[in-house]
Structure formats: C-alpha cells, structure tokens
Image (tube, rainbow, N blue to C red; front, top):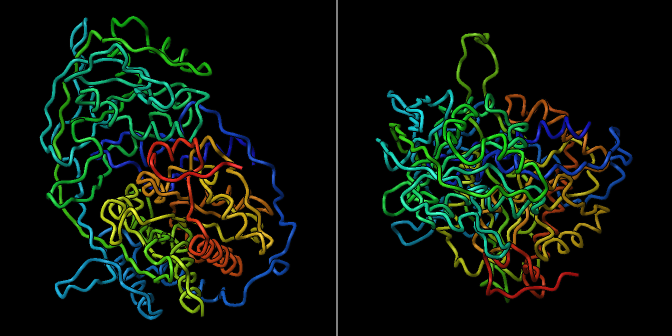
Length: 587
C-alpha cells in the first residue's frame, strides 16, 4: 500500500474515540495527534504473502490457540451487543473476566467491599454529556461588526460537563501553537497577556519537532493556557492538519456525546477546569477571528508550513461570545483488576492491561436496510487484547515458580471514550501508585498473519525496549521500530495514562513484517471500528497463541529482572513525569 493511502487511513487508527470535549484536553485522545506538522515516515515495504509460514514458527505448547479463539468468540458474540460503556453486554463480559481470574486463584484487586474485602471490579461512575435542544455557537465581535457561527456548521463548541449553561464573552489573543515547555525552550506565551481571555492557537506542533513529544504537548495545551490565566481555547487548523482531517470530516462528530469519570467530589473530571470553553473553527470562522490582525490566516499557515516554523502571537482586535447548553446523565462501568502476588519483590508491581469495551450498537439510519448489521463486535479491538491477557494470566498462575514482582492484570473500560478507565485507575490505583514499576498495554493485535516481529510503541524511551527485544528473541520474533513515528501511537492508548504518572510503559502490537503491513492496511481500511470486526475474519489463531506467549515472556522479564524498567537518562517523558526516579544509560 502506498504511504499516502496508509496515511489517509491513520486517523481511523486512533485506537479510541474522539477526545472527551468536556475534559478540555483539546487534542488528547483524538485525531489531532495525527495532524501535527511532522510528515509521516514511510513504512518499509512488506510482502503481501508471508515469507514464513505459521507452522514454521515456534510455540510454547502451554499456550492454546483454541482458548484464545474461545475467549474472543465470547467477547465478540452478538449477544453482548458491542460491549458499550454502561451496557449489559459490557457488564456480562466484565463478570466473565472476573470469574476467569477467580478460577485461576488470583487475588481480587478491585473496590473494597463493605466486608473490608476487595472484589474483582473497580466500579467507575461516568458522566455522559450531550447537547441540549438549544442554540449553540459563537458570535465574533470584530472591527467590522458581529458575525454569528453555528455549532455543527462553522464551529464546534464543547458541551461542558460542569457548566451546563455556558454563556461567555471575552477578548481574544493569538498564541501561535500555544506551547510552553521549558525543557524544549519554547514559550509561545512570552510577552502576551491572556489573563481572563480566550486564546486562539494552531492545531498540532511545529514541523520538525519530535513527534511523540509534540503529540504530548498538543494533548496538554489547555493546561498550558490555564497556567497563563486563559479561560478558553480556540483551535485553528494548519494546512497540514486540514489535509489529514478536513473540516467536513471533523464536523461529522459535532453532536457526539462525551464522557468523563466522576471524582470523589461528585464532579466530572476535567483536565483543565479553568478553561471554560474549547472550540474548533472552520476557515470562515477563523478568518473572522483574525479580522484586522497583523497577519492573515494564510500568512500564519504559510509560516507554520516551514520546518520549525512558529508563528508569533499577538492580541486580536475581536472578542468572542460563546454559548452552549448541555444535559448530563450518569452511568457506571467497571475495570476488572486481579493480582498474582510476587515473591521477594512482591511490593513492586508490573501491570499488564487491555481494554474490554467497544462501540455498542449503531443507530438505525433511514437510508439503510432494516436487517443491516449494526453491532460493533470489536473482536480484534479489543476482544483479542483481553483474551491475550487472560491467557497470560492462566499460564503465569500455573507456573511452579511465581514472579518476583507482583503482576496486576488490568482490564479497563471506557478506552473508546478517551482512555477513561485507565485514567481512572492511574489516578485511583488499588495498589500503591509509587510501587507501579512498568506497564505493557495490549490493544488490537491484528491476528491475521504469522507475525515475526512486534512493535513496542514507546520502546525508545525506557529500558522496556531492550526488555521486550530480549524476551521475544527466543521465539524468533524481532522488535521493530515504530513504522509510523509521525502518527504518535505512543500517546494513543491506555498505557499513556501510566506514562503521565511517571511509569515506563509501552503499547505492544503485532508487527509489519512477514505480510503484516498489508494485513494492517486492509484491516484499517475495511474493518477498524466497523461491524465487520467480528469472528468472520480470516483469523490466525495460532498467531494469537504466540502473541500471548510473547506477552507472557515480556511480563515475566519485567517481573523477574534484577532492576525494574527505567526511563533513559535525558528522555523527555522520564524527565517530565519522573524527574527524581532512577534513570538508565541509553546504550
């Protein structure tokens, strides 16, 4: 597949739904991380037909292809109705996982019960926020008068979970990319007064910035704006981001509900509570914001197109009136948490995680036949990752010699809503947070071919890279570099929530060698987040067993190593989130 074709599919490979707008982390867990200025790295051409047959690859007989198939078949059954958050189908699936953990003799590590004993489930309350039946949009008051733009047409304004009747008017300031990071020597707010104002910023990050660092900065722009006193954020597309995700595509999700976990204070969690409104705008609305400004939208975009281009900020002559009303309801959904106790290092914890939820059942559309398949079974995404975790737990629990460090098996909910189950656990762990030493997350292994390599997204940041490489080498499986670094997969799945708590973590996937590139491309083009992600695909069940073996080996290596996983010295993420933690020399 041509690189340009693959890149066109990459926004679908978000591994999660659009960002929860009420969380006000304006670019996190959404396609924006794929829209940054850095060009996509070309994928190495791979053969469509595998060079090595599945039967030629070794497999530890303890790992069962039939068991992997049986578990995926259960999770992906139509009767579970797509395992949406808060649904009966997801509850059934979670209880199935819990009973499997119980049968293995693991220790429950969910919520504490009234009897002072822990159960298997960590129950989470989520607030679902939808748009009320009322006008929503913005008015731009500029030098030439007032211009009105409607939500779902020229603008998209967040429905706030904690401010159901938003009516806000404030001056505007353009702040370039809106990035402030001392480690990288960037402060787009220098010399600008944004106190009590709404900032207008460019989507993504400067061309040429390392992709994963840039994606993280994009994900936290609202917090940066809040730190400088801003009360709102407006995002304007660059030329590069508009090519990847045109406005016409973005606006299709304008009325989708958003979710947030509810904290002990009874309020929906917000990444930047001081940011009262988050808005994305079309070119028409962006031009109105910049009316009378020192530079036009086209001039700003041309500067951003250049390598390292960082348009400077300036006060705008316009102000903005934003208004939206929302309605909220609450649902609950559980993580499932179990532990295999360690031995001499049992007070340190390795976490193996995967999400159980998927997208549920699609709405009936008048243009479609009544019998159209509308169940999003989520077989590969992520029944496969959950089944893998169960198989690793089964084999590890049967080992005569247990692991040195304790191993936590975490099956999360609400990944598709913005990594929310993992975020809740990272903020409310049922083990001492400071004792979590590493995480491997399993999300959507494509089990359609005899894989001969794995990709550990984020392997370059910590000793987890060498740990993974050494662990799978006896299987005749290699560790390949990220085949699409510009797409910043490292910040796109549940493990990123552990990274932000200072925990070395990787997201593990089957690799692109031996026919994998074509298998992935075809899956993304025709199956990802579609009802046909089901049991009718051409599964390679033995590859599923080998993927479980690979993760078993990796987990045991993390649990048994003389030292826990460590961030590399000088690594951006280690320095940002674990500044005082021991570091390893990069070899």
